[in-house]
Structure formats: structure tokens, C-alpha cells
Image (cartoon, rainbow, N blue to C red; front, side, top):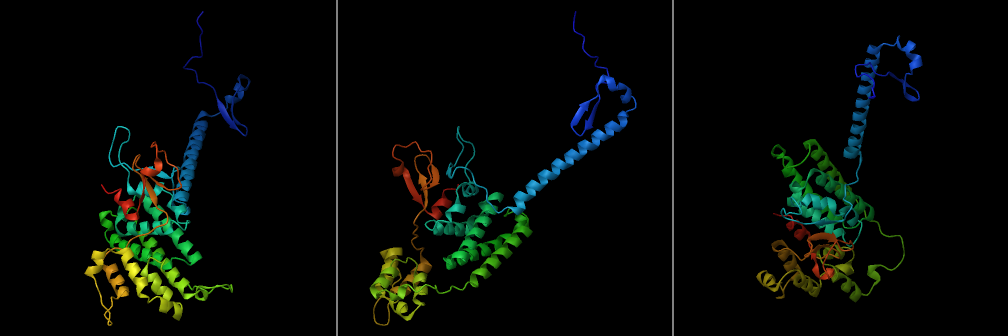
Amino acid sequence: MPFLGQDWRSPGQCWVKTNDGWKKYSDEKKNNVADFSFCKTEEYYKENIFLAINYDAAVKKRKKDHLNNNTKIPYFHRDKWIYVHKGSTKERHGYCTLGEAFNRLDFSSAILDSRRFNYVVRLLELIAKSQLTSLSGIAQKNYMNILEKVVLKVLEDQQNIRLIKELLQSLYTSLCVLVQDMGKSVLVGNINMWVHRMENILHWQQQLNNIQISKPSSKGMTLSDLPMCLQLNIMQRLSDGRDIVSLGQASPTLNLLCEDRLLWKNLCQYHFTDRQIRKRLIMSDKGHQDWKKMYFKLLRCYPRKEQYVDTLQFCTHCHILFWKDTDHPCTANNTESCCIPISPQGFINLFKF
């Protein structure tokens, strides 16, 4: 005989909610079910559904607000390298953007490394001057979070103060121009958010101006205690003429050493070519070449040579951008021969299409 199941026109089974969960009414309790109002039950079900939907929406909203407003941790991909591709292929669709590279490469940890600090700060300055609008919304937020981390590090260590002041000034000048064009959608986000960020930049600048570098309490040997030949040798290791001038303001002895003609001559020959130097010759009253004045004049006309201890590396074989101590999936036999260092300007040029 064929199996005859329950008639589909039957009212079905009745369930009630208890402290232990939902339970089904048994056949023995049908007499009690007769007094049960199905209309009230339906209203009760609807009310529970609406409460559940509102609860889920509230939980999602709290999570979203926590990620957008309360956290200062930038988003980073698990891999600390990125494949730089400038067009669509059968294997990959689309292209890599500057904002994606800025999120994927671990700049937040790089600023804690003294070898990479100047490199990251220079990259932040170049992005502030011309590439800020090329970043996505999350990349712009990541940029501001890293900048805040840089400022806090400088305030704590009291090092590279002038470098960060120049970065903040460049960023503030660029934002003043961009905020005026908010109607053209040049920045991602509400204008009030960017005004608040500009206020933070002014606050950081005020904090940097108020730094008072105290003399170390230790009574050990200082720079002035070294022989003058060693002091001059240390000055020759400085690649920025402004640092030499600042060092000369520390004591009369250092000021005398900072006027050494050979020191400024070597600095000019390091940063500029012979042809550039011949075009900007400046003679002193004694008939000698004034190398110090020539350096600052050349600096206004030509870019100086940039020098970094550690930089990003680009693999010409697999087109991957990575930090030197980070492994990347390269298929070349000799990986080191395929890797070339990338300057901050070269990093930006990789994403200009």
C-alpha cells in the first residue's frame, strides 16, 4: 500500500517558546491548545522577528562605528609585498593603484625602524604635495594614522624635528588648496572631517615648536670633548647642509669647524654635478670660491642627491614591490640580481599610468 502522509491542508503543529527553547505541543495537550489564540501567537511571532532584526542592525552599526571612529589601527594585508601590474591580462584583471600599494606595504612598522624612517617620511611628503587625491578613502585614513604615529614618535624621541615640520607644512598647504575644491570631489569624505584633520596638523605643529631639548644628565664624553679632527670627520658624514649649520650653533668650536671650505666643497660635489657647479660659481672677497653660499644656491636650483639606508626593492623578474627583509614569491634563479632599490619618487612613478 502506498504511504499516506499528513494532509497538507491540516493546520500543522503548534510550537511555544519556553525558557529552555521552543517546544512542540504533544497530542496529550490538545485540550489546552483549544484555548490558545493563534492571532495572539502570530502577533507575538512578528514582534520577536522585528526585535531580532533591530538587534542585528544595532550590532552591525556598533561594529561599523567601532571600526570607523574608535580604532586607530590601519588596515594591512597579510602579505607585505605587492604585485605591480599596469594593465589587464588573462591571469589578472585591473591594475594596481597607489592607494592599494600604500595599504599593502607595512609603512606603519617601517617608521619604527631608524633605517627606513627618512624613506617613509620623504614618501609621505611627496604624496602630500601631489598624490593625496590619488589615494582611496581607506588609504587616506591610513595615511593620517601613519602620520600621527610619526609625530608621536618624534615627540617622544626628540629627533628629526625639522624633517617632520617640513612634512606637516607641505601637507597643510596642500589641504588648504584641496579643501577649497571640495565641490569637485577631490577628496574622499566629509569636509568637516578634513577640517578636523587640519586642526590636528596645526596642533602637532604647535607641539613640535614647543619641544625643549634638554641637556643629557650623564657626565660622560660629549662631542665637544673629542679632538677637532674627529669632530670635523663626524661633520663630513652629514649629507644636509642645514644640519651642519644647526650643529655650528651649538658651540663656538663647532661654529668654527662648520666654516671649513673643504667640508662644503665635498658637500657640493656629492650632491651636484660639475656642470651644475660651474653654472653657479660664487667668489668670496678673497678671490676664493665660496662653497657654502654655492651649496645653498645650488640647492634652490637643483634637487640634491637623496641617500637612504634601507629602501623598498622592486623585482624586475616578477614585478613585485617589497621590503628588503621580506620574502616574496620569486621564480628567478638569482633573486638578488633581479632586485633594484626604489627611491620615494620612483615608488610614485610606478603607479603613474
